Image 1 (tube, rainbow, N blue to C red):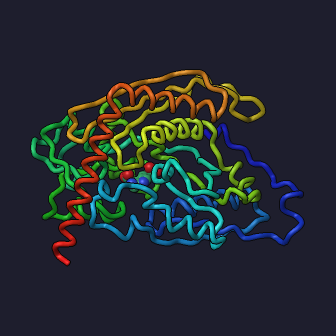
Image 2: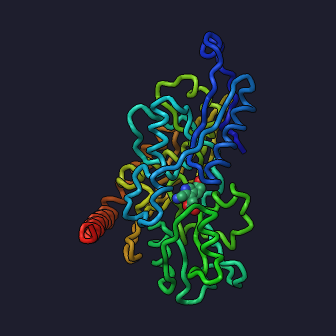
Image 3: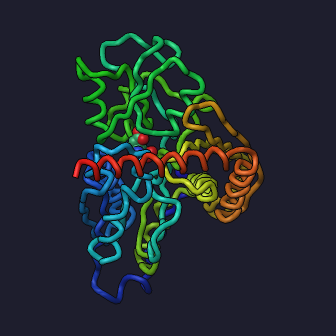
Length: 360
Ligand SMILES: NCc1[nH]cc(CCC(=O)O)c1CC(=O)O
């Protein structure tokens, strides 16, 4: 239920004086990204029938560099940077992202103006076509599970030490093709359920892998719209798209990740819940926000987890709650886990560079 959404008409003051503008929505060119962008455009067209909207699709560093492990690429702005350049140059006006791919710190002059209602945020197991396995517990020892996410590998290695985890890159369709290839190495993949559902491939989900088995990624399942901070018109349109309950949860999760100083490439998992919701005049006034966060070492041997729960009355208070969670995690073991990962990444990046130089 989009209880926090509301459609406001643009005030005459903002829009009527100049001739109507076309808002160009942009994203990566993957099939999933295009579906997402078209969905947001449709919502905007329905809410603002007198305005016009276009779309533009481009490829990003993350799309181009398919060979290097995501873990080594470092995860910073891989999926967003080229788009942000186009945004700042006024070539496009609204970037539609999976919020989970958006770094916790945005470039100067850019802001997240809308967070849309979240899909189911959990991860799913997708078993290779024709195999009889129904869930993680039924996979034989030695089965190869494809995922490029250190969060998934770390948490699952801890509980399923008998499974083998192997990198798999490419967009969702490519990954599924690699899974089903008759001579391919994978028995199953772990994917965000939301992506599969949006692609109309929800029927490929063999089973959900829910917390506490697998805590999901910060903001997994939520779409966001990024705009130029000084674009008042776009800001007003985005207000109508925002689902406040999702926004409060995701901002809390993002605050946790920001304090833990990680991007999508650190093994941080979360689970959020908003209850006892109080509304006034169609707006979210207050609710009890419960957020669990965990940080797991890559080998799965160390695992720090904590839950905070408090009544909050604004997005700011939700963020403060998320920050408090991160500080607790940091001072109870997460800091050393994250430091070890940073050190390892720097070492491996150095090794990769040395190997490259040796070849040159
Ligand atoms: N890392 C890529 C990515 N970014 C967002 C999603 C899924 C959709 C979402 O979380 O909104 C995916 C695919 C996946 O993790 O399986």
